[in-house]
Amino acid sequence: MGASKYLDHNFWVFLWPKSYRNELPIILEINLGSNRVYPPKTQNPFEISNFPFDFRLDSILVSKIDEETTKYRLFYYIITIFTLSGDHISTSAEDIEWVKSQIVANGLHMQQNILRKGINPRTRQQQLEDLLQFKGISHYEGQEATNHTALPCPGELLVEEHHSNYGEPWAGGRDVFEFLAESAHLMPNSKVLEIGCGTLRVGLHFIRYLNPEHYHCLERDELSLMAALRYELPSQGLLSKRPQIVRGEDMDFSKFGSNTMYNLIYASAVFLHMPDKLVWVGLERLVGRLKPLEGRIFVSHNIKFCSRLGGEECTKRLNSLGLEYRGKHTHDSLLFNHYEIWFEFRRFKV
Ligand SMILES: C[S@@+](CC[C@H](N)C(=O)[O-])C[C@H]1O[C@@H](n2cnc3c(N)ncnc32)[C@H](O)[C@@H]1O
Image 1: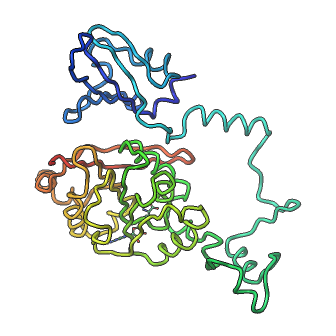
Image 2: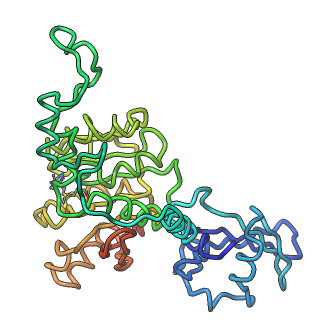
Image 3: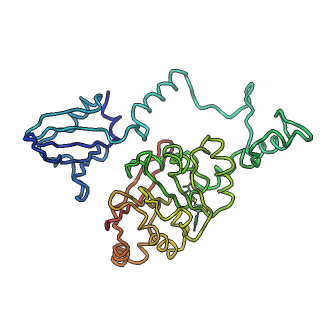
């Protein structure tokens, strides 16, 4: 098995002193993908090449990775390695190889969108017209017409017009989820708040991954909320996940309760559409809801709400809130030539 499968994993490494006499282990967190080792939480990460004890990560992790827990005697320490996240979230190199092999094995090529037997391509508009006229669809008539649908959904949503409401392809939602979930080291019991979740292009993936009630969203657009609640959640079988999706546009998060502490708060393509003042109001209200040190805020596209103040002023303002800017990241899409830009923040004051 290759190393690539584990590039997206985080590992906890426990360094137990060999002369073990009730001493506590040193706990490190390793990410093979970013080539980083995270020493005990409060310090900054350092590169694997600077890792002490001549610890050969690639040989140890990759050769012995099949075992869930692996022990090594190395210099003065016994090292125990645990995988931090059970499931891998990102699409792995093996996944990609597998699907490519399936395409080759089936001799598949992209074809013109032409009429073939049993295949009748049509636009969303044509599909909607057919749906409204019951063309080719078995249906109830008369009084029975209203008796058999538990959750009647508007035709526009059924033909997924809302998948084209924003510029970015719907499929990019998965890219965003994979990047954020792994960057924030999420587990199913983590809590996540999305600001401006739109039609749940990204949110669906979080809702599916997280435990019930652990995904919250504040969104102002009624049509998007209709699409989310009347089409996306029911059609994806995610109603049982009870996401808390609240209508609002003034950064009022009070409806989510006062006790929730989030592992991740993110705004995907949202802050750039908001007045700077409102963004700052939101940050001010949210900082106390972000888990200190481990919790993350991620903002996509740009942070002009900050840079427009001027670099120093911006840092000062963030600091006064107890927030630290941790850097800019880019993340490549799996399916199309695009990378998303993300800005990372954490709460440094406990
Ligand atoms: C470009 S869309 C992005 C939607 C989603 N985050 C995604 O990546 O697919 C921007 C979303 O932000 C929402 N939005 C803009 N200003 C808002 C505000 N003040 N409060 C809540 N949502 C807002 C819009 O209604 C819209 O759904």
